[in-house]
Image 1: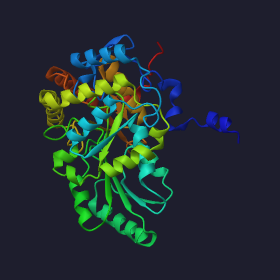
Image 2: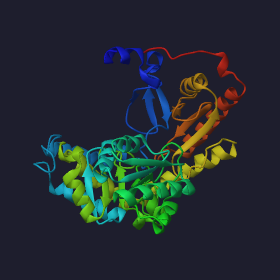
Image 3: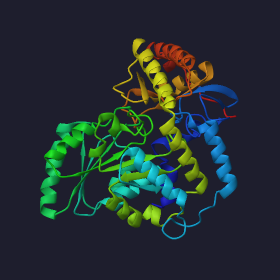
Length: 415
């Protein structure tokens, strides 16, 4: 069958709904300055769908530095890959400051988070090595694992007995091949809000010889006494061999980094194909990241404000009887019972009648029969925003429970 014909016949699980979903449920256009209140299709919305945890996207000091750096350097500088002609004192300064902040000897700056994780995994393991990873790992980890030419095992989410079983199987293989074991998990899982059981994983190092790679995209800047991440929060930062985070969450920017031993970071600098053969991160983004990191370090009130909102909305939802799972992070999933058509009507009702914009997650990301309203609290939300949202959720949950949504088939109109 012709490849294009096959694609035309099967647009994929999400693309098959694009004829009515695009522009509203998928690829919506939020307008105005980034923050809790933004425009959507001509209306003001209370927005819970941005990973702007610390509110840095429109922080005046950040905006000032971003503008000044763009005026001074332009978006092209430096030209070329870091290895060839794209290095700078600012890139190296940011790496040093990140190393100090996350308590690791060395750091390598990356262009993108998703691309970075895929490339780190590809660089770190050979065909004789075995990967063992958490079942609920982010798509970037899954894609990196798929590139691996050797064996890989998945363990049940945060299940240390399952991990030990898979490590036992991995060790049998590496005892024969002479390879190593690479364990991958997340600091904070972006859908459930669970913290990875880093303590439990690291404890298994006493029995098995492996290296641990942690993707802490949602934990960096939000978790731990200083915001250094989930490893700091659990008191096991030293047990993480390679620590990764993106700038796309707490830093409200573009880019990422990986930190670890000097020799390993040096190896990655010379072997990560996604960086060796890609243009360096533009200077304004680097200078802006230096400023953002400074604010993470020097303004603990940003993190304190975030957690005030987190506790308010999570406690408020629980008090009203909502199931928010087992989250122990700012990520706040609200789990309801219903099918995809019900989710469509819940979304419409929240946006059209209550002015609330949040992400809604359905099968296959969550099990069939589950609707997840995914709330991302930020430091710039207010307690009034929290109360307004809980009240709206009570209304739509009652309608869902009483089957009112199943008796309507309204769809958004094009604008």
